[in-house]
Image 1 (cartoon, helix red, strand yellow):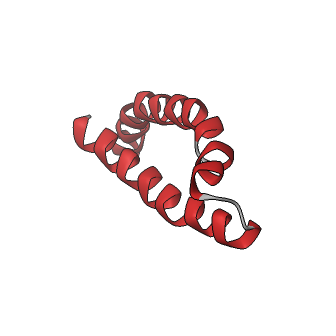
Image 2 (cartoon, rainbow, N blue to C red):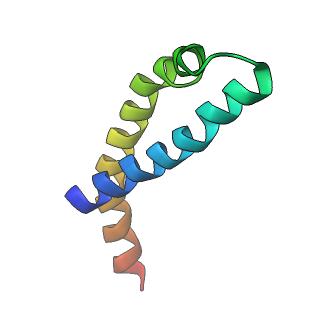
Length: 68
């Protein structure tokens, strides 16, 4: 479970590490404005999606394991 959570956090961090600077460069925003527009509003939703995925993933593994 912790490894899954770490992987999800790492994936989101990589997306934000690329996306936020790109937003700043492509729009001419300052980095702090890009963080405010392209990261902050999405943190709660991303955390909820990760929590939901972590809850559903073990059940999915069990279902797929029972079919094979």
